[in-house]
Image (cartoon, rainbow, N blue to C red; front, side, top):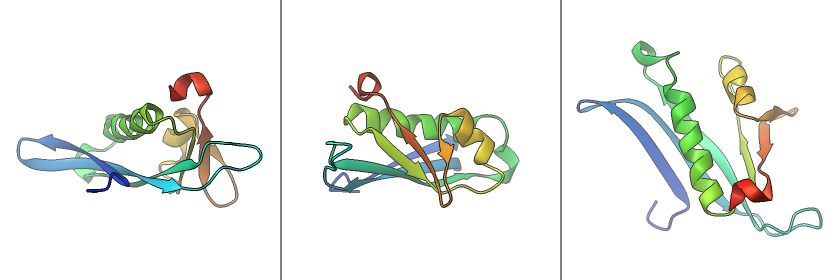
Length: 110
């Protein structure tokens, strides 16, 4: 976290953490199809069972996306449980055989 390679976000109710999410920034190197050398992976999305299905995960994943956009990163991936797949799909991620990914437009990344 000190070197900025992991960004964490929490929601609290009083002193209790009720939800969290993070994003890992990965130096991927540019490719022929994408000169952007960075990728991001959303990780550790969790909501306490008493606080599920009211938008906390959506809020936190959106915070992760906003943070990577602010850094100019356009490629974002995540692993998904079956329960969360519809949430991530609604946020613009598409499924592949192993994970869900999202490509941000250049305008969104600035």
